[in-house]
Amino acid sequence: MSYRSSRLLRRIVLAAPLVTIALLPRAALAAGSGLSPLLPFGESPNGRNLYDLYNLISIPALVVFFLVEALLLTIIVRDRRRRQGPDYRPPQWHGNTRLEVVWTVLPFLILVVIGTLSFVELQRDFQRPADNATDLDVTVSGHQFGWTYTYPQGVSVSSEGETTLEPLVVPTGKMVRLRLESVDVIHGFWVPELMGKTDLVPGYENYTWLKIDRPGEWRGQCTELCGRGHNTMQLRVKAVSQEDFDAWVAEQQAKQATPSPSPSAGASPSASPSASASPSPSPSR
Image 1 (cartoon, one colour):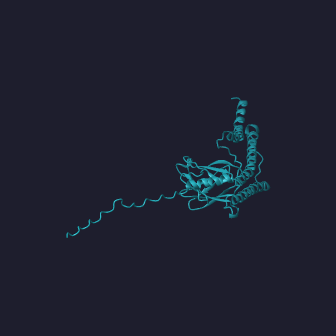
Image 2 (cartoon, helix red, strand yellow):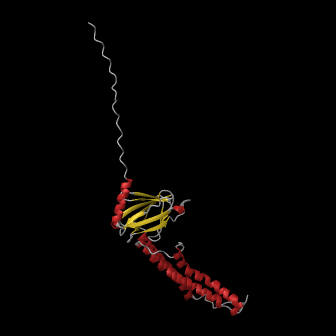
Image 3 (cartoon, one colour):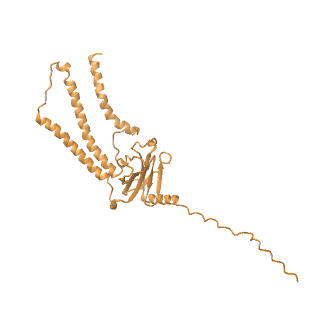
């Protein structure tokens, strides 16, 4: 292989990862494969907060990544032994106190900012919303391998894996507080287009919430490896208008109402009266 060919090959090898990183998100989104590294734009305020935080952290991180990679490639190409000679020694920065302080303090400050923003977001989006801010309380109980949604109106809906994939129905424009609990192992409740992931831990209550402004339906999945049927433990969240929600609740109440037991037939009186003692014959005169 000639020198020019080997040089071209090295350039292709170095450029391939960068092209892949640039094209993967768009290709994955177009195919709907779920492999995109981009966080979906949330339909609920807590999901949008996570989207904003993700971008606030990821975009500077990508800038730092490409800067480091560009400097690394520059050094590799510029300071090759073939170009500089076997006795070449690059400039040494060891002992430069100012530079060493900068590259120690700057990453520390970046991590402090990321940690502070993440902690604030955690407190805002994963704490139990106040009672006076809540319009609807729903208890979400996870079990192998499905969900049970219990509403304060006395309605309980079971969703069993892929066989009976019933949605969690919520009204639009309302603050819906979800109390998450598990009856067996740890499960994870996550609908990416709506909110962040929250675990369901046995013996412990976790909370998350929704406030969806438009009707629609979104899919999710249990995010903890909870057993052999984990892949079937899917989620549906359906947002409808308040009128449609009230009609759905009334329909579920009628469907789940316990039928009154039919009155048991009482003992019917005997059709034939018991034979009375035959009258004694009148005495002959």
